[in-house]
Length: 275
Image 1: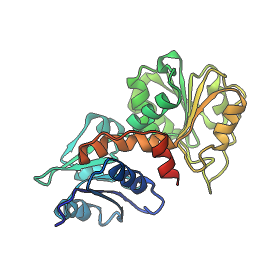
Image 2: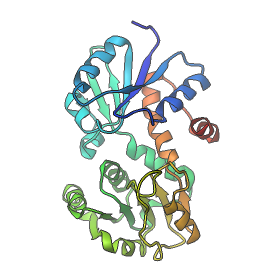
Image 3: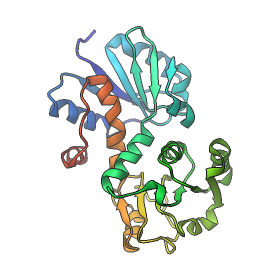
Image 4: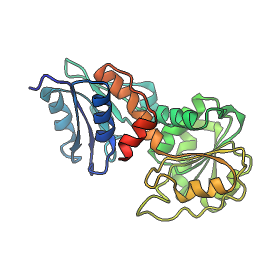
């Protein structure tokens, strides 16, 4: 067994993940002896891999698609926020072999928006969210915690959005995808959590005509960094925050737990990950 602390990211596929670049940069920057690797793991091998990693010197792992939900069934201890979101992206392996699961996506989202738009006040008005997947769930929990008065959701398949309303209650309102542009009227925060506009995906075609120039607009897609959605929002005079920071900030709590140092997300971090 290796004596240096090891962590990694579990997913399938995994070659696209920027997490190894991020954590390896932080390890080098802070002079920490440690290792962070990408681990391609199939659904069938998930449980055996999780049981085996601590024996190989792993002290934790990040989890990405498609394992964020299924990993929960193998955890011995789950934080309240991961339970509420129904997914985990950060694991800590205890010395006795127990697995502790958390979800830092909502934290990463909030830290990114606060860094990119320092005077943003989540309580100042409704939030409009495109999409109803796992990222949307994490963001809804974070926004509700921050005191957003109303969260309006449009998803291409309405039942998925209705399921979020059922889980999170009256603060959530659902609109049809064909009327998604209408939820921008009066929205203080606007978020794209869909893959629309991502490299290789379909275009984002919803009109942003009703967008206020006082709104803060963010996209969780970071390839490209300035998505068509963000460009359209900029053209309306709104402040925009790209999605890369969410990825960077969600990695902070895990790195701190595994390697004992709270890393900084700054321009040098962004440059290293984009290099």
